[in-house]
Structure formats: structure tokens, C-alpha cells
Length: 573
Image 1 (tube, rainbow, N blue to C red):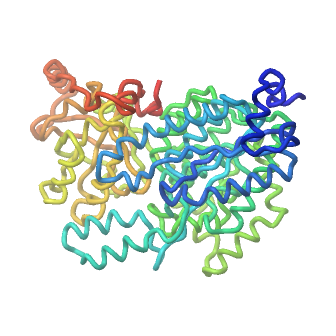
Image 2 (image 1 turned 90 degrees about the vertical axis):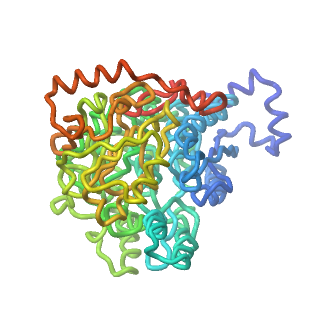
Image 3 (image 1 turned 135 degrees about the horizontal axis):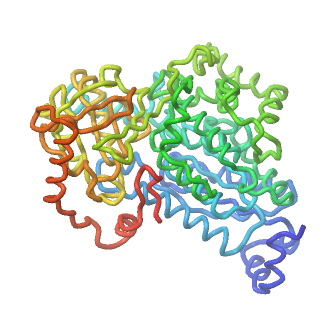
């Protein structure tokens, strides 16, 4: 088989001298050429350490007889973008990164690739690009940061910030938490979007087994990157592309793992967008169907007790897969060139679990303290539910594993706000009372880029009175760290004239997680029939006028004009 790079050399005589001018040696030109794409940059802890992994992957490529070329497209940090309009760039950045990676890989074709990322948008961006460019590829994830003193982790900062705003802790206490919540590089140490998407990459079969969500400071991670470099050359020589590996059954496996780990709601934006690049139509109803009856096993924050590094200590993705083995398609192919079932059997024999147990022993923990056995789950109905009704005809998403049981069935009074800033002010100043439904609208993809409502969810979840007595409803989204009664991705969004734009003060909103319902059932505090509600909404719709877009130029204008519904993946079409 003639490699793509060698075919290109035959038709582009400028290529050899240009690469020699870049530092390649003449003997490198005829080797398998591997693009090593990463989100390395001084952008945040999840990307700041990735150059080390790039160099390890490059060594692995060389050891396998290839030549690695380093390409970089760094990402932004959702945490650093919080509290200001920077968060509006978060979701659009995913698609922009995928576009840039596509350009890198296709402008000068390579024989294979190693793709290295850690965080919320860079992980799905790399996975989208891997599906789009479809060259032999292996993914390496940058792992998770260490926890701080007393196992302090970053997702707790939102709670402490709300407590500080209410005068419940001192400035000195707040400063201590801020100075110690991120003691190392790596993704944030909880089961947020970054950790979830690292796990999804392995669950799809695109990573070496057992390498997702390792501690970023562990030598195991460098070893994984080096092995990935070697594997990329093998994949290139055998022309085993992602399109030959990832099937619809691979995505179903990933969703079952997502249910078992109580993964981030943002996965409902990312996994359908990734599936689309692989040629599959995967909608939110598929998530709901597969989550129903699925066992939730993971005792990791924010829904559980331990920081995310303990996930690897307990056996990581392979251990989760062993527990839900009967629910998985074990015959799917993976980047090892073997099936998922073959990989799981090999891990039992090669000492992987013994090594993991050594880490747990240092903390005097058992595997079951972190990953429950299948027959002793935390819950048996997955972690995600898709709600529908006249408020969300196309659906809305709730992570019910972090919702107080009191809010599984509720009739609430609507308190609509047209931006998050007004809503959080109302929460912090106690204008919101038990029994309210805080509605934040015009925050969907077309409205404002679909930012996270992180501070509002933290303000509610950390309030003893409100945390189990109100709900937050939005056409925006939430951080993977969010807890409490939060329902997002309401579609169609307000900017498109969805019903959420028509909700009035003191409308009655019915929420039912078991029955998967989200609907308007009353007006001015009084119940009405379905026919009456439909007539009232029709009258309101006639009076509703589209808002002029907030964006007149740049990326956010482009995103607002082209983004699809959140329930389809929020990608640019």
C-alpha cells in the first residue's frame, strides 16, 4: 500500500524542500508521516502541559519508524470565561477548532494522526475532526488535575463564591479556596464535560484501553502518549481509519458508559455533533432510551464523593465497561486493531487492574468505594432524561442524578428573565421564593452562543431553602459541574420563537422527570386546560417579535446565523 504522503510527494515537488527547511531530515521524507495535533497553549491547566505529551507521542512515532509533525490549535477555558461575555464564545469555539484541525490535516495530507486534548470543547472538537478527516488516528487525553487540600476541587468554587456573596464565609476563606483549587495541570477534577468527553473518546474505541482520565501528573500518562505514537504508525500502515472503527454500536456503547458515570449534560451537544461527522444521525431521544434502566455506578463529584483522579485508580473506563458488560456491543473494533471484548480480556491479563489497585491502596480505598458493582448501583435509571411538552416541543435535558427528589414532580410559578445576569441577581437578593421556576431565555445558540448558566445553578444549589424547592429552566446550557434542579437545552430556543419566549410571569410550569414532561399548565397562577393553554400561547405568539441579534460581526454572528438546535448538537450547519 502506497502511503498518502508519498503520493503527494510525487505531484508536489515543493513539498520536500519546504519540509527540509522546517527541520526534517532527508530520510524522514519517505517515512509514514503522522500529524500530532494538540490544544497545547498557556490557555488553562487542561492544555498547559500537553506539549510534554506531544513530545512523548513524537518519540513513539519515531520508534515505530514514522515522523511526527506538531500542529497546535489551543482552546479557551470555560472557567476563565465565566461571569462575562467570554462564555458566549465557548460552544462556537468547538466548531472553529474542528475546522482548524480539518485544515491542518487536509491542506497537507498525512498518513495518520495523534490527537491530544483534555477539555470541554477541545475534546469534542478533536473527535469531530477525527471523524471528518478520517485518517488513521489515535486519541490521547491530557488527564485530570490533582485535588487540593482536603480534596478541594474547582467545582466547589461556585458554591463558595455564592456563600461569600451572601456573607457566609470571609474573604480570607474565599481566597484560600481560590488559591488551592487547581494545584496542577490537567482537566478539572470532577465529572464535568472535560472528564466526560475524555471518557467518551475511549468508550468510542479511539483511545488505547485504560488511558482516559489518568492523573495529569502521573508517569502513566506519558507512557500512554508514547504508546499512542507507535500505534498511530501501525494504524497508518494498516489503513485502519476511524470510519472503519466507529459504528452506531460504538456510539451506543459510549452512551451506556455515559449513563454509568452520570456524565455531563453537555454530552448531548457533543456526541450528536461527533456522530454527524461519522455519518450517523444520533438524537437526544436515543440518549433517553438508552439511559432508561441503565445503572449509574460512579461515586465521583459533582454527583458523588471523590475527585476525578480516583476514577483511574478504580480501573477507569475498562472497569465501568466490565460492570455493564452485558449491555455493550463487545464486537466493535478499536484502535488496537482488536475488538472491545478482546481488549477487556487482555487488560485482565496484563496487570492493568493490579496497578490501579496500588493507587487505591495508598488511599485505603476499595474499588467499590468509587465504582459500584452493577448489582449495587446508586440508581437504576441512568442519569439523563429528555423532557418534552408544550414548553419544549423538541425537548430539554435534565441530569436527574443531581436533582433533589422533591423536584422530580412539581408545579412551579414562572419567573422569566431575558438574560442570566438578571436571574442571578434575583436569586442572590432573595427575590426568588420556594415554588418558583426561574426561566432564563435568549441564551441558546442563536440567542447568545449558548453560554453556561453556571453561577446561577451554583447560587441555587448552595441555598438551603431554594436548592430543593425551585427549578432553573433555560434554552442555554449548564456546566458539567452543575448540581440541583436545572433543566437546559429547551428547544426550540427563544431566539427562534420557541414557547420559552412566550412564558409570562406566574404561568404555572409542570415538571415531571419520571413522566418526561415539561409544560405550561396554567396562567396567572391558575390551572387551565390544554386547549386554553394552546389558545393563549397562540395569541402570545402573534404579539411576539423576534429580537435583533446581539452580534453584527465576527464569530458569534456567524455562529448565531448557522447553529442548529441544541437537541441536534448545536453545530454550525
